[in-house]
Image 1 (spheres, helix red, strand yellow):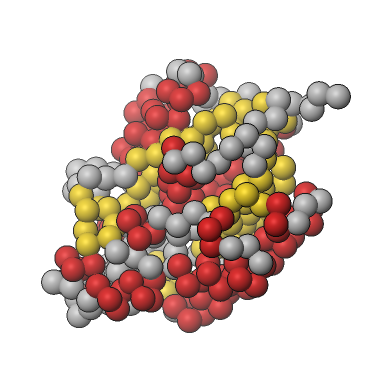
Image 2 (cartoon, helix red, strand yellow):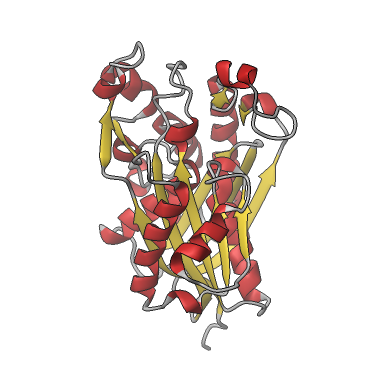
Length: 328
């Protein structure tokens, strides 16, 4: 019996800026070194956007690649979702900038603000929109210019963040790229990971700027423990819901935050690191963009084959978390 059409990923595209910043480059800005950064994070280098290159610009470039691979033109997109923690501005949202940049017409355009969990949130929403029949083709983007909101006086966090974008075209398919199940969640923990100022709670002022309150602040130990626990829980839950075992997962594409988090969680689940996509050594932590960039790279490298079960997992500000299990 043929499978009923359901929401799936038709294509993926990604974009990373040209400028490469190594750990040695950062050592000229803060008190750090390559060995210290790599042992604690797994990062060797990252990409930074140009001063005149914004989150929406990178989102547009990633979208162009995804549309080309899907053999679609921008006018075929019915809905735009952009996951970002570093929008071009408060409003209009970044999705509207993408709409304008690609000449898409008056389609719905929505930003999702759950930081690093944004792309998996967006994929669940995209699948829901497609499966209801309300929309045929949804553009799902994760894009960040974190270099614009990094605290360059904090040696523990400024080494992590980077810029880039990834995009997925979600539509009804006959099986390929099928989004089998997803779940998202959040638990309020403001102090763990936040950008304190710039909203109505703390509008911009001389004081907020002087105190670097418009930049990312995080409590590394709190986030680490949370992430390891959630990565393990999500992997087990996704497999249980799909009726498969962890051994059946061909590839895990996790948020690229810290290789030690991923190694600890995968060891608990029993998935070897040979089946986990890691590219943070070259791209750093690009928040909502990290999963689609890594997914795109795995596809181009031939690591994903037809019928494979692919697990996407992320955690982020909120604290938020989420996963998507996909059969390619």
